[in-house]
Image 1 (tube, rainbow, N blue to C red):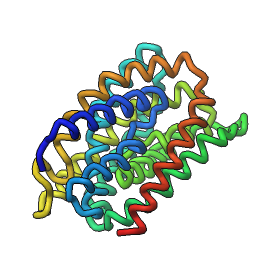
Image 2 (image 1 turned 180 degrees about the vertical axis):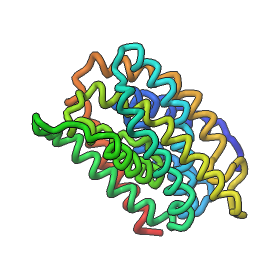
Image 3 (image 1 turned 180 degrees about the horizontal axis):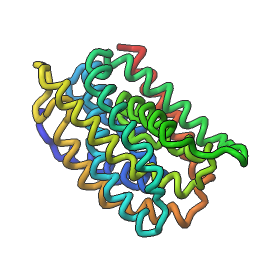
Image 4 (image 1 turned 60 degrees about the horizontal axis):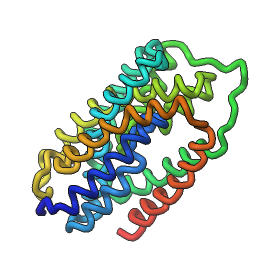
Amino acid sequence: MMLEPTLIIELAILGLCTGFLAGLLGIGGGMVMVPFLTWMLGQRGVSPDLAVKMAIATSMATIIFTSISSVRAHHKKGAVRWDLVKGLAPGIVLGSLLGSVGIFAVVKGTSLALFFAAFVGFSATQMFLDKKPAPSRQMPGFAGQVGAGGLIGLLSGLVGAGGGFISVPFMTWCNVAIHNAVATSAALGFPIALANVAGYIVSGQSLNDLPPYSFGYLWLPALVVIASCSVLMAPVGASTAHKLPVKQLKRVFAGVLYLLAAYMLYKGLIA
């Protein structure tokens, strides 16, 4: 698999777009990245089953860098709820390791594609409806936050997203202000990505049919190019989030997510 200029340009554009979305909506970019990486790998001869897994793993790896860039911008504005990060992070690490080392290695990539489509569709519906929580609802205590973090980490590892598609709706459902939820989700993306990537590398070491420039399930060219571009745009997205009407943006983005979910559903069904 040669690193032709067209591939580098495609990866760069994808990195710029996902980095901006990561900062703007706190979603980590994985919901956009995975379908496009699956398509790129498939175009270069990688089997559909392996392409989905590599896209998920590579998407998650880029979030390590995107989250650092994004959270610095949010922290400067005082938007990150570090008390919630401390409560959710332990469960996130445990759930991520369980998903990436155990479940991810044994589940078929086509099944993961269907799972991805279902959760992206669910996330898009939550964004579009923008339901308001009951005024009395609050975040659970430490034990409840650890449990919620475990679920967020587990599901994130199975779909290659930074957890914002679960953590942002969860926090806003508990009456955390949307800008604080987005900023806190960006901070949570780092432990989610770090734990999951470690699992993807370990679980992919025994495979013999990986394409060139792979490290476990990670596709290194995509990781390098996308991460380099996304860290440039994440602060721009974070800054924009504090200036634009996020509610309207979320509804537009929900429409895009429905299309991406449909593509992954197609990939899961035809294989």
